[in-house]
Image (cartoon, rainbow, N blue to C red; front, side, top):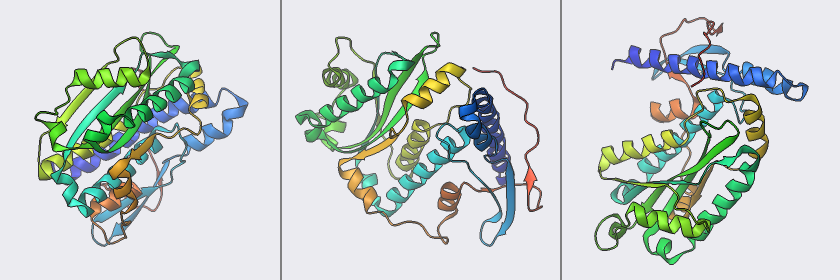
Length: 302
């Protein structure tokens, strides 16, 4: 794919996120308490500023609202964490010599009013599993991402789940100590202290070097993907209330130590760092200093 195609795809995705954000704005306009949120989200990335970059061509930048439920800022946050992993894998290349597992841990759907209690149960269960001999013998470090989807057919329910990137010992990855999905499910069930067998998916990353690096970065992007459809109004307001002050990403063990030792990028870093941390594009756009995005047609909810 050439640069122009990549740039156009980036701007098209930004427009798609703006469409999703407009649905959130309409929800926030429905109550006086959330009117400031509506204004804040509607103004997010509403104008682009372009300027020439010495090294990377035309740079497009914009203002972000930093609202927790803004799809654009959710996407921007995913880029920041992707950049953080990018720096880890570049500054600590020995990490790519290790073995990685991508683990998804689920629970049964809960009523959206019970979401905070369910997330607390899941966090407590993850802590218990991390204290087990099974974990300590095999897992060197982990990064846990929390994702919450609507319950599908039942609009009053939510589907919270964890995506986890695990750095594990080679013996756990394959050989006598290999841990299959069934055993992961059993360990998670015991930690949750529930009678049912929760659905668990464990994927080993089999690549090496650049292939492994790209698999890890893709997993980070997938784990933090923004919401591209507008949920129901009551569901959205309850979600927003139930998840206040809760952390979406948390690191453990060796990976937590490695992240704390990272050096921050400076302005002279590679374009991947610049683009990911500042959310800028090498884009084919008009060169005026400020311009509004064109009107975007509303999409139907999935």
